[in-house]
Each structure stands twice: as structure tokens, then as C-alpha cells.
Length: 76
Image 1 (cartoon, rainbow, N blue to C red):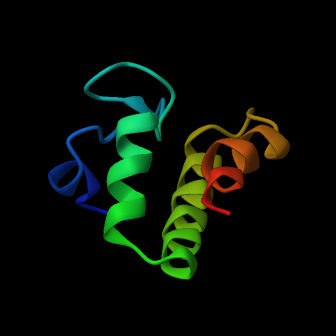
Image 2 (cartoon, helix red, strand yellow; image 1 turned 90 degrees about the horizontal axis):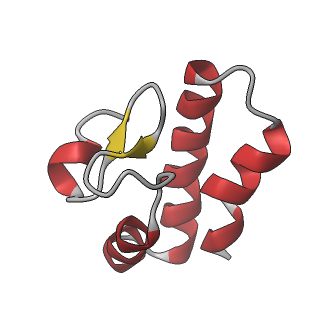
Image 3 (cartoon, one colour; image 1 turned 90 degrees about the vertical axis):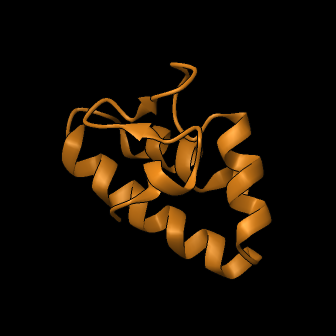
């Protein structure tokens, strides 16, 4: 997805997917709060799945289970 850095203050810096604002793994807590406030539960999961796929392309060495935990587990 493009343009997320424009909509979320704590946006991802690619290709590391660390937060461009605070340097923590994205989505950091402030990004999660903002994303959850902007999206319903199902839409949030869909948006974060899209980000997971992009991150997997940017970081092919990252274990799938870690990417799942980072991008999707928190959305439930």
C-alpha cells in the first residue's frame, strides 16, 4: 500500500519496516492505535495483511511466523 506514511505519523520506513518516527518495529504502538481507530476490525486485518505481504517481499529472510505476529496477531 502506498501513502501510509502520509496518513500515519508513525509510518513504516522501507525496506526495514521500522517506524520512521520512533525507530521501533512497525507497526509500533502509536501506529497500531491510529490504524485501529481508522479501520473496523475486518478492514484493519485486510490492510495489515497487505502490509505483511509487502514486508515479506522487502524482508525475505524474516520468518513468516514473526511477520504474522508483528502485522496481524494484534488485530484480533
